Length: 305
Image 1 (tube, rainbow, N blue to C red):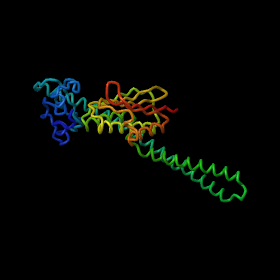
Image 2: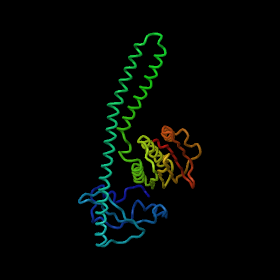
Image 3: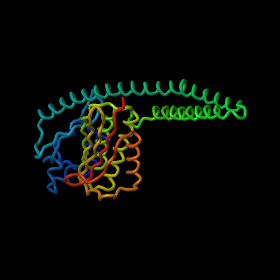
Image 4: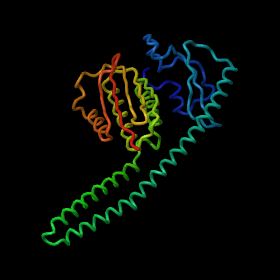
């Protein structure tokens, strides 16, 4: 993989991808691996035909049908590909609509929760803190036990108020874009492949659902791990896996790059940040050599009821 834009993608971005463009061509994104005989990276594929995915006159994207050999397309082939593109385009459009509706519902619910916390809990805690501060000022000299109790209550109230405000900020800023964690990680892997040419795949085997804060932390850990792969690993492939059981969720990122020496990541800001995010959830974080070469990042966080 080269990571560069191929002709069909550039044509799609320019808005001039039409049915007359459909042909079998040598793929520029597969050419490097094909020419260096790294067929394991391309599954033997070298050529492809690009098919527009449409709903009516609206072009949603392109689909590449790949193979190892060049073969000219005749008129029936073009009609078949056009019909296939229309059917797949309709399915993609319906999936987008369903996902958008679910994302909107989640966003609206998060906004409602943030507003409720701000307008009720945070406001009540602020009023309680003010009353406690007033009570402290009214205490007479020598009421040490009462003063200690009120000061403790005030400290707890202020801490709870801080937690409520942090919850409001978290609910209103969503790096997952309103998606469930698995969908967000899948999109992250696809974007990484498109930007770098490193083949990233995602496997979802998790039976558990996490709290949103935990999903955000795992997503940020995955993003940081992929940044490290891009900058340091020299990898050709990276796999993200989400698994676990009913008690915990595990996120694993494996790459086939140069590997990491023992202790090499100590003190690095990105790795320290990943460790801190996992620890804040009561979870574990490990990074080390992967069996067969490369690096493995493994995060495990408990599922809280």
